Image (tube, rainbow, N blue to C red; front, side, top):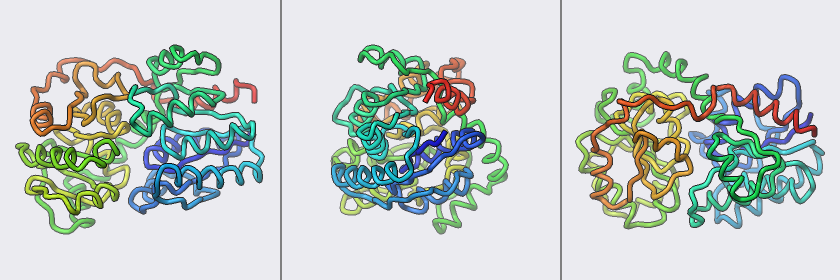
Length: 365
């Protein structure tokens, strides 16, 4: 089978690693990088660390408005489909790259496989939610990470081609956590931070918050951004913040107290995995990091009103927080009761890549 796979953003690189390895054992994969994430620290390093094959095509789209970015991707992907004549096209998640790939294939009557199908936050103001819904409704096979996702699709009338494969990000975490721990043991993780960022405040394991802020619903609202950083400045532990290039640009003109915030450059997957595993708590608006924190048994606070990963909320392993200063402070400093409860097995068994390949093969394409 010949399959085109579309990737373009950090979470998709993480998901692509185990699938590409499994699929290429018996099939041909054409890897297309849209260039949605183009910063070396958010792209190249993931290919190196996770052993992802070099992309066959890189569209180099870069940043831009949703319409401009998606249009450039759509044009480029269409040309590749016409040239390569694949048996199908696979997309991951909920980015503009996801939607562009699915649209291009669907209009050319090429079967679309959507990994991470069926997620819903029920907030259509989020561009990610729009991308999810549109992609699901034009996909031929919907490869769901959880039973909740299967149920969401059923409620929208989508029942054909739906398979619960488990979450492919869980595969990647299981494959790499021991590698990460071995690489950064005995303080080497802090040495790496200093090497990349210059002298920074000394940090100890389990004595820092790990934060990421990049969702448009937070970053495009200056009042929200200021409130988030005000709350961070009041916490009793330092906040380690790998800063997304887009967020960095947006905070340049804001009056923010950074006294308790350690800003560092975006980091690779293995170091991020280690920092997540060894943080006191993760504070984020990222869907992927919510899950990684859950898998690594690190408490999480999500700075959003909804989450598409509702399973992580069970037993307060993850707690949603409004983005006003008092709510953030209260939620982040809550008493941690999650450790009193075992985590239910809701995201599969770590062999999702295998199950996806089996589902595609069984689909009879």
